Amino acid sequence: MNLKGRNVSLWFSEEGRAALREVFAEEKRLDDVHVIDQDDRGLWILVGSRQTGDMESVIPAMLMKWSFVSTIKTDLRDRGPERETVFEL
Image 1: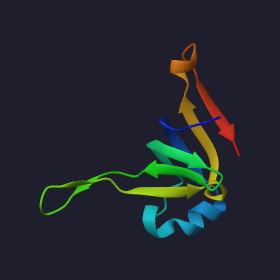
Image 2 (image 1 turned 135 degrees about the vertical axis):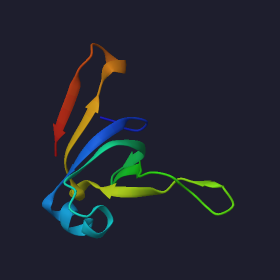
Image 3 (image 1 turned 90 degrees about the vertical axis):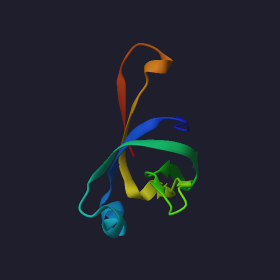
């Protein structure tokens, strides 16, 4: 399934928790992140936004490697009846 353009919740694998500990502390998942793109390496996601001193908006993005994700949850409302789907990796 192509997740590009969707908001998803991501649960980290053990490898992901270990690798991302400094970025996301003790979090076990990320809720409502936006997928910019996906490829064979993983999901390119928006992780928030901040403003610089000159008020230009900066949108940081990061690659969430497939090996760092154990489960993905997304809403498929635009593809049919209201429902959520959970994908186990």
